[in-house]
Image (cartoon, rainbow, N blue to C red; front, side):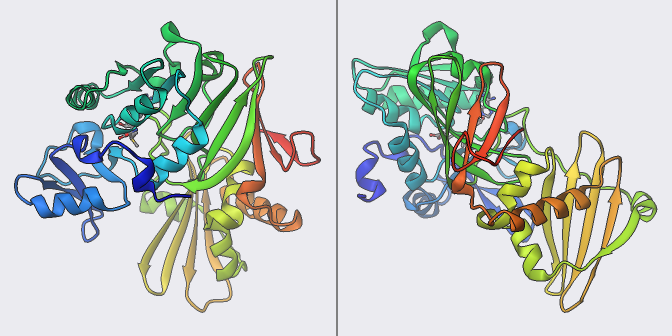
Length: 366
Ligand SMILES: C[S@@+](CC[C@H](N)C(=O)[O-])C[C@H]1O[C@@H](n2cnc3c(N)ncnc32)[C@H](O)[C@@H]1O
């Protein structure tokens, strides 16, 4: 495989805005870097094989402020190349992208689809969409950039040969399948609420279903409206929570939170559960499980060197018990890795996840 630089024929400096955001670890947030004030730092960000945050907090935090949540970015170049390779865009293809962002990927798609092709790219944020349109005109590409919620697709220009989403989704929106021709492909980061996404490539079938396998691990921002939420119970609420202990070891907790180990499986077996890990200091770690829908919450308080850890659980679901069961299932079933999983989306929208083959022994509805 050639280097991503040779596979990405449009430079990204034409698309990244002059103000970008970088993590400021001391604050847990993001601070702005301006090209005008620090050209060499801005250029170093462009040249690195890293994502660049281009908007925070849905545009509500202005440059100079402290951003809390990245809401738009220019994706990591090597990942962009991997996703484009998986999408197999050919000359003349009709392509739908969800998540225009800077417009860089839309330009790359336009190059691949060529003059005979047609690219539609949907961006939910009006300011982000306007910037992308301007950048695309500057470099001489003319994909159609639509300002809308991309989970509805863009039926007017369907059917598409290829659909790519550059934000992650929990469920595959039905319109994406309906708007792809049979034999076409959908490529998207896909994952559960637990917190880890995999690259999913789906073949669209004649009967209106779509199926395919999971690939590499990805860290993409969620499409708006499907963002994960965490709970922060008050001290009083925590004091009222059920208290037990767990004898799971530090190594087992590593597996419970690591994507290539048990975490992907746990997410598939424990719906609507989001895990967060916080190191208070070198000896104390908090692992929390959140279901904002039902206001259920659990916390395991790890202490280095201890034989057992305190567990607190609140709300109608016992999230730690569910995670513990799912972890045991993973161990009892050959510790399946994420790349052994596949997904079938049926014509009625039901999602079935399976291990190794769609007709295999281990499959369940999500
Ligand atoms: C990782 S960025 C996309 C990177 C982009 N493809 C590029 O080349 O720069 C994800 C984008 O998806 C957009 N987005 C999030 N939810 C969306 C939705 N429901 N419909 C359309 N766009 C959405 C975000 O505003 C953000 O700009």
